[in-house]
Image 1: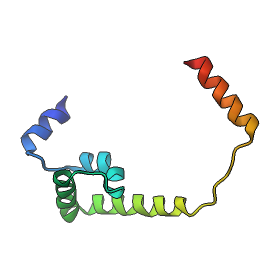
Image 2: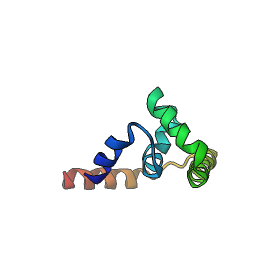
Image 3: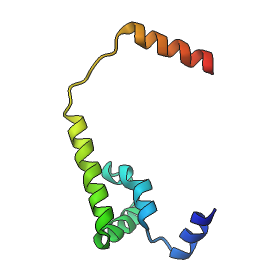
Image 4: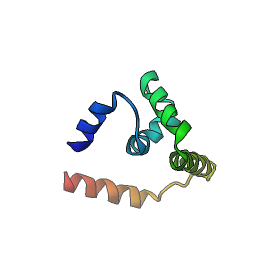
Length: 87
């Protein structure tokens, strides 16, 4: 609740919590223009957030270069069975 009130008084400006919450969408180019601008404005003046987004981007890039692995069919079936039991 406090974050909602705080966000209301900031008039669309982002803080470090907002950057953490929206970093994946930012890197995927999934933010609308107003949020993207607010995100970039905060990044331009916040070194820790720049480091966070840079590290996240590098991590995503490194993970995307790893070879894909197929799970054994028995494991897949076991997971599906468990999901059906729990739902």
